[in-house]
Amino acid sequence: MINKEVSLFIKACAMDSNDILEQVIHIVSQLERPRRFKERVLCLDNYNEKFIRQHCIGSYTELIRLSNILKKRGWIDRIIIAPTDIDVIQSCHLKWFGIACEKSHTHKGSPSFVHCWGLNQINTRYVLMCDVDIFVGRRNFEHDYLGEMLAAVNQKSVMSVGFNIPFPSDEPFHKYEAPEGGYVPETRCGLLDLDRIYKQFPLPNYLTEGSLSLTWYRSLEATQQKKGYMSLRGGSSSTYYAHPQNNLKSDTEFINIIRDAFYNNNIPSLQYGNWDIVGSKKLWSESKFEETINYNAINDDFSYVNKRNTRYPINMHRLEIDITYRCQLRCSNCSRGCTQFPVDSDIHISQIIEFLDSSFQQKRFWNKVRILGGEPTLHPNFIEIIEIMYRWFEKNSPQTDVKVVSNGAGKIVREKYYQIPELWRTESSFKDGSDPDYFDPVNIAPKDLSSFQNEDFTKACWVAMECGMALTPNGYFPCSVAGAIDRMFKINGGRLTLPKDTEDMQKELSKYCSLCGHFLSDNFLPRDKREKLIGNPRSKTWISILNK
Ligand code: SF4
Ligand code: SF4
Image 1: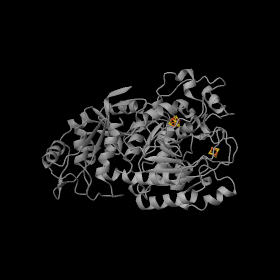
Image 2: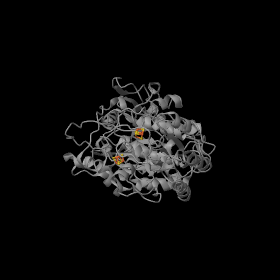
Image 3: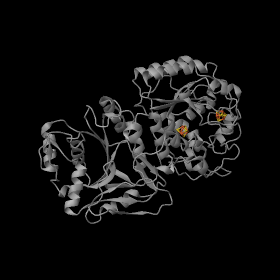
Image 4: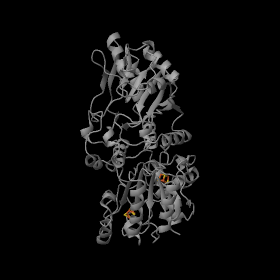
């Protein structure tokens, strides 16, 4: 359902260039259910000098390049870039505040022009405005948070409604309300009624040392107090957001952990009642999801109700490297086929070097890289591979979150594991060789099920977005499970060179996802919320390939 009266307006600047791709995808995919926006607009600030509260050296060129990728892939409809022309700045400030000020920032260095100008480019009455660095959590994707916010903003004398913050799931609905004079408009994430705001023009402001004194939202707050308008807060605990302070943003790994926790609706209770992210990295790490998605609704004869609504992008800034298919364990339903189809197949060191060289040539930004298998420590050149990669990432991309994911079972594995840099160790996958009942039924091919006969398999699944693309002994794939399927079905569909981050790998998805049991689930579910997987369910295509 498209809401024709509301646009989504996401603000970004050069400092956001590191993770704009992940963040825009996160925000749009979390917010566009059950309603879609009429238009998704990405507003870029072209300011490239010293920022107040600067947290990194951003790249404006990279910001533009990645924004164009987002547009090409359909995540946003329009990119708008604030002009630098003095006449435009003056006339915009004249319209908003009755002052033809030529400075784009207030006297304290906060941006003013980019927001005012950006809002003027919006063609709908309402706009959900947010910063690109926010995290959004959903307990229930059917919850019509936008409908509730629209009902609240339509009340008499309301100018804006703030997006709700995290509360416990059993917290009753908080009525949208405000004290006298209203709250300050929520600029990090809130719904604005532009018609009502424009009717108050010019808003109060004044000059200090030739620059505006008030930001647009402080000016709006002053209008509220003078004319009896309000900005409200409230809402249901089903949908919420929070915001990282700038000092957290240089820790890419921490930001990834927080984003994952919001995606999985698995945030620490300490966050309840807070706008800004609170709590340590350790606290957030304890709530992070592990590796697979849910198993549900398949019965003995594999009849299954197709509930696949969501389309997932491949995260081309994340990579899993399955360096070997050797594994000393034999878990049921192994997503890499190490139990169903064991082989001693390893990645060649030249593939690792080619990957690093290509990353360098493509100026590729890697947000997250995972070294896995099989059991990665069983690769005959495991330590050599780690040393090569460690040197390269330390020199060329120290901000990338790189980890080795080991099953940690047995003396040989543990001895090798503890030879790698501590920074690169993760304890998240430790298994004991039993039959994990939280795995997905990977060997049920959706194409064997009647309800998937007309399915579009390029929708992919949550794994492609969270884990990203893959490099295996057989080349590059849209995800590592696809790489394992390719091996077992002898498809030979791996790419020999690193795909560019502008590519979508749709052809591969339609092939591999039709064979993959992960495709059956529309959303990620934490392990304790999944139905238990019993035995080794296999559909006819898998039975025939595994019996060969
Ligand atoms: S430890 Fe991992 S790779 Fe090895 S069999 Fe179990 S699930 Fe598969
Ligand atoms: S191959 Fe499987 S895991 Fe990979 S994107 Fe497709 S459905 Fe998801």
